[in-house]
Length: 249
Image 1 (spheres, rainbow, N blue to C red):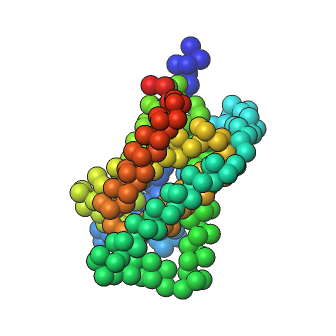
Image 2: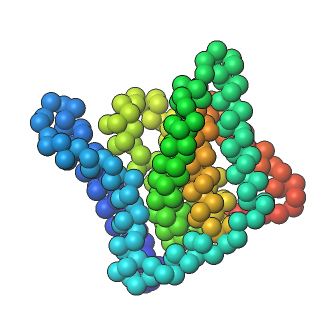
């Protein structure tokens, strides 16, 4: 009965998150289609990233369970092993972006971060938004799923990818092919973040890694998918060689 209740709550939570998140971009969508919208409503889009965390915190407060979850989110220590995972992912993104720049004779980093100030500002902003997101997706949803670990990681990645779609369509004006690529990318990122979270149990490290993916992977999404898929594949092989089980199916 308790398991059924939890599934019902999670279904409701995901539904509410999707609806409220879409509402945040609805004024922008209406404005793009020639409908006059009060300027103040256009600022709703900035709440988009906060909706999952707000919904998670609200549910936890209703359950009187918020302290337990937040203690669990920060229960693990950030050791050299987990820092190394983050550094490898970051270095691979930078290396891949520079390789793309060299091959295509373009300056992806310079074009994105024109000054040191713009880089620092982006880092701070992306870290804050990543932390807010991770409270909901890894800290809340991943913790509550009744599936085995790998299925939970993939489920969260799928829900997380779908949640991004209104932003990709309305704000970024992406086509269907690009959206499919971004969904694959988001799922791969979720695999790395989910695996690491299960290992370290510290949402701060996961937020830093999340921000690093946004900051360092600046090549076109198709190239980033290849780089990250390679990291996951090689990492899985090395882990299997060590004789340890990463997950049970």
